[in-house]
Image (cartoon, rainbow, N blue to C red; front, top):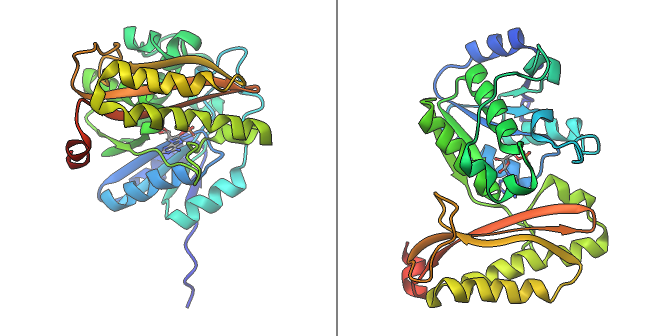
Length: 294
Ligand code: AMP
């Protein structure tokens, strides 16, 4: 008897994907990644497996979503270890195409536009990033035709934009959000954490600490949340903050002082040479009891 988990079917071309997809009966979930998998990705797979009959993972380093001065060339590539994680977590099919398979005619002349929401927050520092993300997500949804697609709350703006695209353009699949998985000390897991030096790694802890401080002031209102988070960040000069915002989760507009309800406290910062993002959803105005009961 052999109890070892079965490795996924690995496909790299469109005909191979078509054949593997046709062999899946029942509901299909997709988890889209850029590889360098960690426990955050595993958590998406675990939730997907609970809610669908089959899980397809895509591993594709999408050149369209990287700016010219960004880290495409040095992004960690760990395909063998990624396959190990997929095997352990019970992924059925891994689609790992090259850019020539996804973009056979080179850079696509027609792209999905993220619109105004794509110009805020991450979009300000990374022009065109979300058009690149949405274009590849649209293509992968067309190629895989899943019932459900799983994305991490860690990339809150990306999740919002994918939800909007799927709704606005009638993709007809369900988008499911998965909570952020953190290291035991609170740092959000990210493939980019491997760039951090030991000192950077310590400095980076200021991000979850600031978010936690903000969250703990939620009963007092928006300014108290912003102030508490900012006060933590300013005490760490090695953390160069790009933005710290408290915004409405749907519009990404700053919430006013009278606002009550769910808001997104989001931060982006450079630590050493690495740009990190993190966020938490906070319930503004709710006291501890209410916050726990929602
Ligand atoms: P990436 O490979 O970084 O493009 O991420 C692929 C998917 O995994 C996206 O939906 C991310 O939001 C999600 N993800 C990345 N890090 C985490 C994390 N720490 N917790 C939960 N989901 C994550």
